[in-house]
Length: 300
Image (cartoon, rainbow, N blue to C red):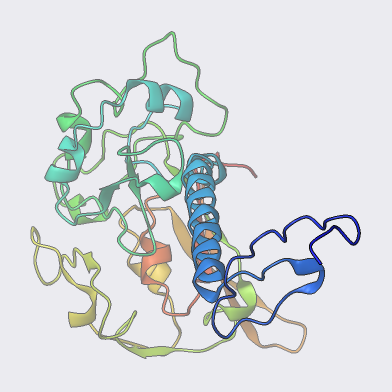
């Protein structure tokens, strides 16, 4: 019998064939294939790395700001910091003429003054082996100068009371340096580790066999600095900061008799200290017991 027995049902919507190996998800939704999941993960990782790289590059701009808080020891004759940074053209002439390679150029991780000269006294101090402060003579802009212009202020405590006497030139007709202002001031910052304060001597290489610093030892060579590691010491009481200081009347060994009658020794920095850094470089303990307070004035 060919008549309608009821309402006709709509034809079923054709379903795409299920992917092999994938169970049907609830509600008829098809789960993502492993290939799709891996592609999504790769896109996420690429985006994360891209964002991280952009943020990392942006943070590099903060590195000079963070490093600028540390005060640098500038070469002899440097102007006050703001004037020095604004006038130095980063030519490197002072680096070229330094006989002990004490002057180097600042890097990006050290602050705003990228390419500006500084001295790391612990690594290599200025021992005035040039006799005439050649870095000042080489400076083309006056950033390093024997005499400041009258228009530039001088902080109290920075001028030296008198021209510094260079020990290596004591027998010369003119034994002084043309250096009217100090670079900084030495301070016994760690007296508890000072060998002299502890009553101890020192024997051997002051900074070990791997130290590459140089110093002018007049008794060995008047003109050519030699490696510190090639000049071993033998001292019953350590006094290297006093004997190796290139400036006369800059540091002495203070002796005090204690209540029990024992003699106590302590390095004492005097007003003629120019802040060259030799005492910090030669100090045999690590970290150094005596250090240079860069750009700091003399204060009683």
